[in-house]
Length: 255
Image (cartoon, rainbow, N blue to C red; front, side, top):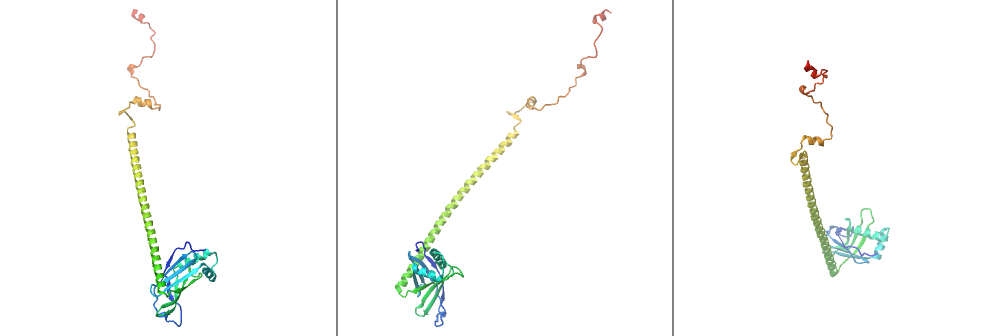
């Protein structure tokens, strides 16, 4: 039910004069205002709105008062839903500061913050009280200034941490990229060496110890059968086998 996790909110509301026929506020210039919304404790929500000149306003709303505001606005759902809608409305870009009861000597005498999450949705209206006491107004302006500085410093520190983290990631990515490039380079050199070795092996395959094998060895290794051709023998080497002699050699001699 409280505001334990609420972070300070800073916004620049758009000032405007409330329509009033008896006031000369329409001719008065509208200064710029800074709005600061924060939780002084877990049960209260506090508003400071100031132009750092003559107009500083304040509002303190308890949980019970915000419950009444919830009923008057007509926002259903749970309490957390209402708080979410209230915070979203205050953070929206359509926050107005309606000024009233103007005088030349003291500026605006009254003011209220009017906000809505988006057009067409319920309006949140917070009435503000002007801090007429100079000391109270100065305290509110000083507190708003220091809280704004703290918020800026926190944002700056977070940005520096994010930048340092980003640089670490970039260095890690660069190192990883360099490792991958070295690995690819080594793989390319190894592949090139293997290709050169394969080409050298193909060229020297028929040689054995630097000498070429003899045809007989090649034939012995070749399992493919070869067709045998008939060799022609010269006539003077052929045996005469036309017929046998019937006469006896001795008889021929006697005759």
